[in-house]
Image 1 (cartoon, chains in turn red, orange):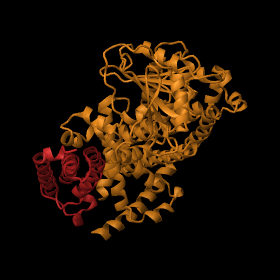
Image 2 (cartoon, each protein chain N blue to C red):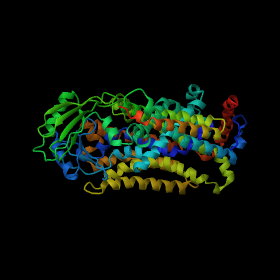
Image 3 (cartoon, each protein chain N blue to C red):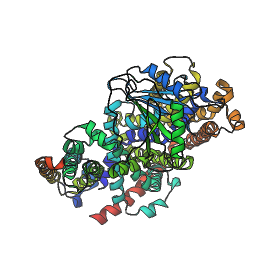
Image 4 (cartoon, rainbow over the protein chains, first blue to last red):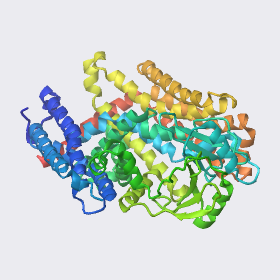
Length: 109
Length: 514
């Protein structure tokens, strides 16, 4: 999807279909892509945090909503919705793969 | 960033308003519980019948393995019994503290608490509320980013400017006033139910075994089953008495595990009303002879952090003063959300008028009135239903809830029908004011021994407080109704002036950021 740069964003254009689709796309990215990254980050933190297992799991979950907030705001600041989408998908996939690879290490007490 | 704020704020404003109003009222859920149970008013002094209460609860749930009993507290003189059995509805019953018998059922102030965390819609409701909370967090953080002049905005309120200008000033004022509180409430609200929707820690750390995860959270080991009936059952009254002595303060509840087995175990959790995170100490007793076995270990540090954060949200610490503070800040949140939707609607007024009827704008306006003016009316109607429905009615509690929904539906219909010809804002606010102002009168007529005057004479400040608060809120709603009596023509003219100044005002920061 081609994007309207912020600096050219005029009131008149804010009602165009293209603008609306861009907003919808970013909203979806913040919601679904954001959840993926958040889930993946909590999974990875549950593996790597230097504390006991229950503390790792709870701390990762507590931090996850801070991650989601930051990620969702970043999506709306990203240069384009498309860029927001692929960055989130790649980051989420990488973290999830790492967490799954080290899963046994993540279950240490 | 301005558009994220508008969108994230808009889509969920109505849902959030319902959550906020429910949560604000739930600050005083136990006080409302008490007001709604006249059987508990003017109890004769006497011992607390924990054993009789346990017998009643056991009859209600004969196969339950675990029972919970909450002893009377300063906020609620009843004994509360809870049973959570998988696949069966949760039992939450108020019992007479003198003889352990059931008292006439009511949804109580708990109705608003449930409305607050799942919109009375079970697990899907928990997800929806979690999502709304997350969007609120986003709206707040992006709101801070776009309002770089937060401090200046706080001192700007121009009600005379009318229309959109005044609404936006009001939104900024209540938004900034409550900002630290709202940020805290949004984050802590989202994390309370995190084990429902953020399961990565359980999936990776515990291979998805939720039971193992919960076992690790609770530092009390479960008793090992012995597969024979207990020879006898210890006195809960004695155990509670001993626990209060050892804790040096009240107990939050007694947990009775393995009710039908010789391994029956009773534990008493400290109320911990002086700690944000709530009680930490948990005393364990043998359920057959009642001897004290010891204390369980402190919960894991991260879980204690979770308890602190959720404690900040659930405000069971610090007494009435802090609950009033939460109530007032929660009210500011309701006003922030109400003004937010109003800004959105006023902004689109002229465009929608040009587009004509088919724009759906009228429906949006009517629904906005239905949510913001209708829900307070329905909430007061719930209290009226509590006093008007007969006490011996078996389905009393569900009828109370249904009168809440029925009144809300009627308010919606009213808003739709009266939008063009009438003044639905004024009419619904006026009705709410009338019901609130007449509530102490209704109370005095239906329960003379619980009237405002009688409770003041008895120094029953919780009971008197509900009636007095109804009067104060009634005056508030009367003021809101009066505000809406200004002729619509003037408001519209002002709105145009306001909109003109608002758009020039709004253009500035955007140019700066460009």
